[in-house]
Image (cartoon, rainbow, N blue to C red; front, side, top):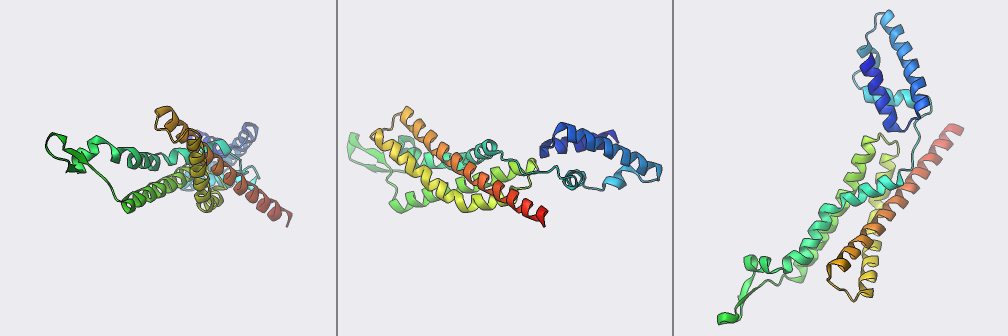
Length: 231
């Protein structure tokens, strides 16, 4: 019984249930479990095979599961999810133009001692690779947010993902435009400090976009719940 109560408390904490309400539910659940045992029903049979669903339903029935904003954590998760795609894009931008890459995949140009290895990828290849990087970043952001909200048992996860799926392409476009605008003020310098600043601008705009979409999803979810409760 103690293990079940402790597990339910952990789940309620992830749901954002206040400590006082969690203690009250735990006391109520303990009394019910003892009563069930007196009637010959085991703890396992009472809670069923899915303890997480049981704890979620227990809290939901008491109106204690509410959509939380979690704007910062959602934005952070979305930004972290873009890291694989961002690194891929950086490789396309800088790695493919490096001397080491040219030594492996390039072709010689010049004669005699002036011969150098040069790799000049076609524009269509670069375009396809950049698009691939954007797709990887997009999928990664959605996957990261989904995993984070799923772990939190967030009731607005599905609505948030729908909003992100539709809105993040615009957020990505805004991030790219902001980065280009900032880079233009630095004459498109390739200094490390400027490149890092470019990345910071892009990630900030992208994260803010995710936070705004999350806010819209939570507000819509709360509105839907309010309408359902008023009926």
